[in-house]
Length: 246
Ligand code: FPP
Image (tube, rainbow, N blue to C red):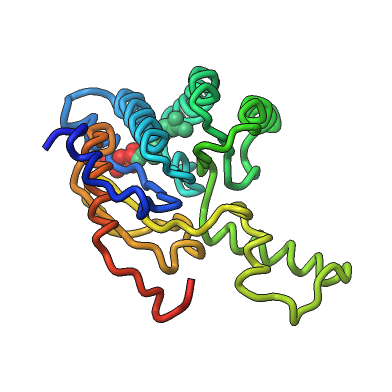
């Protein structure tokens, strides 16, 4: 079935509010095509564009993509530098188009290890889109889920010491205020490409009740059609949240 036909299969009243994606397999795609890893990442950007376009088209509200993990610093200096540059350049090159399409873009993650000028430029570029509210696109950059929880714990302790909150006021909801993702609903669906079936430190707190969807497709090959297939599969699942009311 082609994309146009598939889109009619989507139930408009059951579009997930938030989809999060672990974009994996750029390196393997490069090996398969006998090209450089750098080229693999470059092709990965085109796949990002496709999922954003589809997100806008179907009325998805939140999309989070795992662009650079805290573990990615362990890669070669050349690859790390390329990735940092690619992410920044993609943001700068695409920002006008994103704004035109109603996308509100924000980076989530730690500032540690990123230069101040990098963070400032990201902030300045993203800020231009903050009037938008069609699709909220979160780019997880220098992101690690466990790190996020540690950072939250530190801020909570500081606020308790300052008397801003009481220990008894700490619960799942108030903890949310201290995460990088504050204000963003938990993901309904987490997609991972390239055949790996794990979360790899991505949104570990937030995905406690998320549906997971895995595919062998390598990220640069991830198509609009497959994105729809994942969403349709999600729509046919029965979510019970362990009996918790939502
Ligand atoms: C995983 O493939 C992919 C990454 C670590 C980088 C993903 C980043 C992009 C696609 C850049 C786009 C970002 C924006 C914001 C436009 P891998 O290198 O781990 O692949 P492998 O497991 O096959 O080696």
